[in-house]
Amino acid sequence: MDLTPKSMENCRDVYITSLQYLYILFPLRSSRLVRLLFIKIMNNNEKPQPLIKAEAIKQLAQKKFSHPFNPNSEISGVSLSEAVGLQRIGFHLAKIPPGKESFIYHSHEFEEEFIYILSGKGIAEIDNQEFEVGEGDFMGFPTPSVAHHLRNPFEQDLIYVMGGERREYEIADFPNLQKRMFRNGKQIQIADYDNLKPLF
Image 1 (cartoon, rainbow, N blue to C red):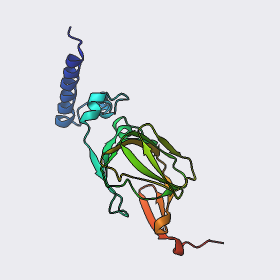
Image 2 (tube, one colour):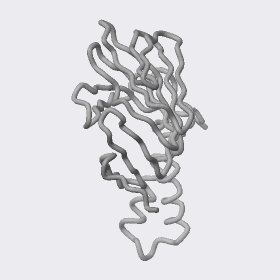
Image 3 (cartoon, rainbow, N blue to C red):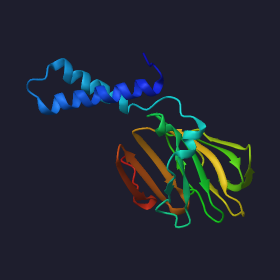
Image 4 (tube, rainbow, N blue to C red):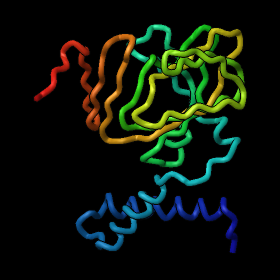
């Protein structure tokens, strides 16, 4: 009996296909067990694996992002946390090309963040100070965090790891714009500082 991974994969595909036909052609006659097996196998098949090898990471599709409040914001990269199914933290490989910036000068009330430089150089703005950062440098922002931002005025790509918490709710400040963001799930609201009034 061939029990190689490729053979087992083929057997699973045949099994799934057979169950699909049973479920589609005879939905009322198919036993409850067959339907449960089909759902279980399909769910297991879609579940992210906890290990992603280096070669697979190289094949992940690059995504681009720019912050809507910063026309010079440009980041590309891949989310390793999403690739393995992490829900509560983000862990991303990111790149800022020469002359571009990460997001916008901002701070967080609840979500902690970190940055680890892999290659290249950049300028980190942290709490109204500027620091040149390069390979091996690490930045962490416990909450409530000081405001921070990263830009690349140099001639080489700035490549780094960024990560942090993913909470259902968050408050972020954009000091240079005098704005505050409120996020509750997928709902996001922005308010000017002048419009924020204490309740009591």
